[in-house]
Image 1 (cartoon, rainbow, N blue to C red):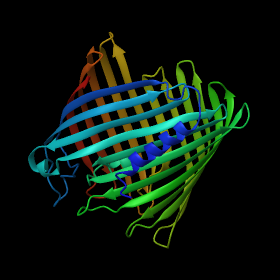
Image 2: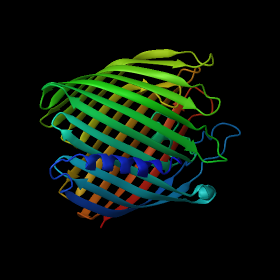
Image 3: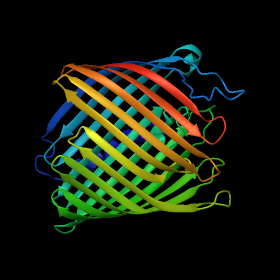
Image 4: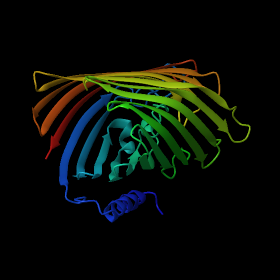
Length: 378
């Protein structure tokens, strides 16, 4: 089956499964449909993120991007179940030398969940993307990549509470990534089972032992690999503070003798304060690049005087490549100011800077950008 149609098949299957269980009032729920449209204009002063100081490298280009995103959010809720589909069409139009890169992308988030009985729950979630943004497939990947691709991910999930304090959650992620024909890019897919044993410390805190395996399969020359991650995970919600902590071991082994196997201690610490400030520190391997990424992210969005919002995003990633003596440091910072005219109409201005410093020649760059965005919810 063509991967573009699998999301419709899976959401149909999970809906039929939910409907097959005689839960009282299962289909007597609340339906909301929210159409909306967002449009933005962004100007980058180094659109292709090139190192113009190196002989033979293309010059920096000032490019304007016009993005129009009509979207619809569908949500159906009952006492025991939920079905949702969030879809947006993303039309990118570029100026200057990038005009031929203009394209229409798609983003869809969809899923369904139900409580079959007080101890057993099931869910299915999926995503569909057609994009040029490399971070959608791998947030630790190459920020200069602009190859167009299609990605589908599906995650069936089952949770069984076998006592008052203990539960088991089983997930199985399936992912397909296909690059457009005639472009540089290697298709790949992976399967990733996840098993988590959860202990409920209280109504607002839990401790879990998690095992995750990822089997990566490339279509051409890149070596396939298997990753195994074992982590201890804590989650707690304390008044205005939400805290998440994880610590474990990540072991990656490759087929053949092209790359050496490697392993390391991985961790993540995330703090959310009063829903407006998030601090996230982590270390792990990238999914599609053979590098270890140390990442620190800080984001804040605060509402002033009811209608005015002020935001800050800052991200720093230190990348240690395992395939050679290359080390990169990528930094992104953005500030934004928004105004809420009413519940259905908002506007914002943003300015930011992206830069990379590398010990590999020709990979340094810096790019400044400005953006204006308007969103209307019908």
